[in-house]
Length: 257
Image (cartoon, rainbow, N blue to C red; front, side, top):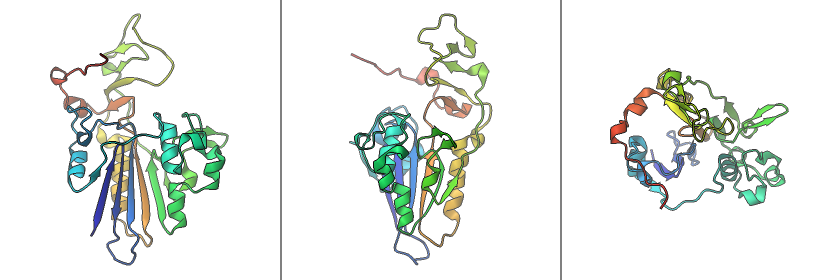
């Protein structure tokens, strides 16, 4: 089986030729990782980070792009550009509140999965690929773009006794009086171990689902998109991941001049 690998910043795509040899069209595995930044071994953004699986992927014949740019520095515009092929200044999707589906340009041209579908592919997805937007009919997660859309599931709450939150002014599970930088508005800049293990995490369940899909036979070539939400904040992860970074071994980065 011929395998071609491409590893991008926060994005991996893998083309796999069908094993039965009945089609010359390769299957495509598209993995989107939210807010990965350069915090992974191949990009050397933080040498303390432990990313053995991504490191192995990068070393196994992948093409690693060291000088890449994002179309927009926040989630919505970046994802809109990736999925539509048009920059924010063309679609008008400059912020997370802008739904690219309302753009005349996006309405006129097929998005990435729609293009695959129109060219003989079965398109399948689960996880965060498009940015979510509230609508009159519920939440738009881009489900309209896929032949098969599987809603995500899973998740486990954070352990409130070991919780840290800048927004809420909580330190080690305890409220701090007059905590600096606390603000009830905005995203939750918080972290702490979860009550449950990794098997209960939504990303784990999504990855397990994708592995099962890859083992199933398909009469058509497929475009499989897998959306991984972490390391997007808040950083609620099982204790085992915090244990990999003992505080006494962490080197505080130098910020500013």
